Amino acid sequence: MDTERNGPVAVVGGGSMGVGWAIVFARSGREVRVHDAVPAVRSAVLGTVAERLAALAAHDLLSEAPGVVMAPITVAETLGAAIAGAVHVQENVPERLDLKTQVFRAMDAVAAPEAVLASSTSSLPASEFAAALPGCARCLVAHPANPPHLLPIVEIVPAPFTDPEAVERTRALMVQAGQVPVVLQREVNGFIYNRLQGAVLREAYWMLEQGIADVASIDRVMTSGLGLRWSIIGPFETADLNYKGGLEEHARRMGERYRQMGAERGQPDGWDETLVARAAAERRALLPLEDWGARVAWRDERLMKARAAERESPTYTAPGENTAAGGLREGA
Image (cartoon, rainbow, N blue to C red; front, side, top):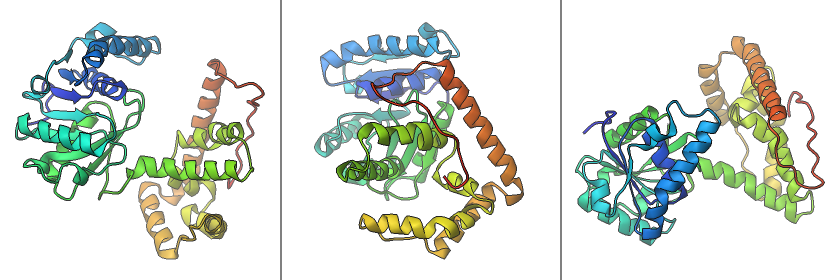
């Protein structure tokens, strides 16, 4: 079984995440069958899809008319009807271990032998709900950001028992669907996305608890600073571009300060020279130091475009919220 354009995809769970996935796969020209165990949810699927497609079209984010994109999406009354002949099954039921275990057992019993069974779980490793299945080798996690039709990242997380071929077929399918897949080398609670998000939230709650700043101020630091920059480059590249000399220079200047910040929160682990050297080597493979200045200019150009787009699009401002944003400086 392959991931050719005509291979159908089943979406199990027709809530917000399931609808987003249906749009992702339908945009790439695939037949999509959506099933939900709750009749009221099933009856709402197509209407919700139509609303979201209309919004995408209004922002010029569809290459075809909404009706054309929506045409391959159907709602299946039974799990078996949704999964029959599907090359990929994307599960989106609520984040309960007992429920996911039950649903995966049912999917494994009726899916074609080579169909990949993927979960959208945001934290549960596949080894916790699929290890006992006869078809466990085709089970894995494909965790999207929410909503998946707007945020393209997908974390593909194989269990120790997952067949590498299932991983590769899932990666290829996601690329063909216009998503951005990242394959984790091993299972970890929360994966990459929620571990990074959790680290920020832990600090945000701590600063609120300690009276350092209020909720609006903490959010503003993200939206007018970190988040704006992180929408273009990630934390490693941010550090790499903050100082001439790259990651190693950043660690030399800032490593001890970051270690002290972590120690204040009971996390004293710092960045030893070996770890920094490993990260720096990976960055230099991506960006030779002779190209550092050009990449900084590229970053600044992207930031200027983002700021210009902000001015063209009115945004909600909470009462008393200051929308003025300061400039970037080296080392921020």
